[in-house]
Length: 266
Ligand SMILES: Nc1ncnc2c1ncn2[C@@H]1O[C@H](COP(=O)(O)OP(=O)(O)OP(=O)(O)O)[C@@H](O)[C@H]1O
Ligand code: NI
Image (tube, rainbow, N blue to C red):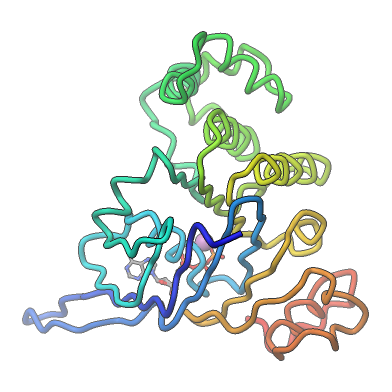
C-alpha cells in the first residue's frame, strides 16, 4: 500500500535572539525521514532530546513561529506546507501529545472528553465519554475532576481516550504510555494495533522499546535530530547483531533485559 505520510530530509532550526538583538539559528532537526502507511504501526524511538516530539509536531504543522523548516512532508500523495498540515490536524491527522499539560486546566475532564466525542461525531457524547473512560479503568467520577486532580497515569489514560474516540487517518501518539503500569502499557499499545488494523496509519513515539516490538511493523530510530536507521522489529533479538546501525544496537543493548550496556546511548 502506498504511504499516507512521507517525511524526507526534514530539518528544523529555531531562530533565537541574543542580547543586542543578534539573531542566531539553532538546529534541532537535521535530517528526519519517516514513512507511515494505512494499516501500519511505526515505532519512533531514540534518546531523550533526539527530536521525536519535534518531528511529530512538525508533521501536524504545530511548530512554534520561530521554527524554520525545510525538507518535504507529503501527505496522501501531495506535498503539504506547514499551514496545509495544520488544517488537517484534529480532522484527518491527530496528535496525542507527550505533555499532559495539553489538557485544559480550567475545564473538568468530562467536558473535554465529551467535546472530543462530539467532534468525533458520536451521537451520544455523554455515553461515549463514559464508555471511553470505563474502557481504561476510569469510573464516571473521573468526569467531574479537573486535570490537576488526576495522577500522571490517569491523565495519560484520559488523553488516550480522547485521541481514540475517533479513528483518524493518521495518529501520532507521543509517549502515550508514560507512567502507566505494564499491563496498561500492553493494552494501550494493543489498542493502537487495532486502530492500524482498522486502516489508520499509526506512529508511536516511545521509550518502551520492548513492549512496542510486539505491535510495530517497523522501528524508526533517530539520534541527534536525524533518522539513523529503520529496522524490522524481528531484528531486535539476541546481541542485536542483526541491527544495521551501531546506535540501534546500543539502544537494544541498553535495555534492562539485555544487561544495561549504556555506552553510546545518552
Ligand atoms: N521550542 C523550542 N525551541 C528551541 N529548541 C527546542 C524547542 N523545542 C524543542 N527544542 C529542542 O529540540 C531538541 C529535540 O527536542 P524533542 O522534544 O523533540 O526531543 P524528544 O526526542 O521528543 O525527547 P524526549 O524523549 O525527552 O521527549 C531538543 O534539543 C530541544 O531542546
Ligand atoms: Ni518527546
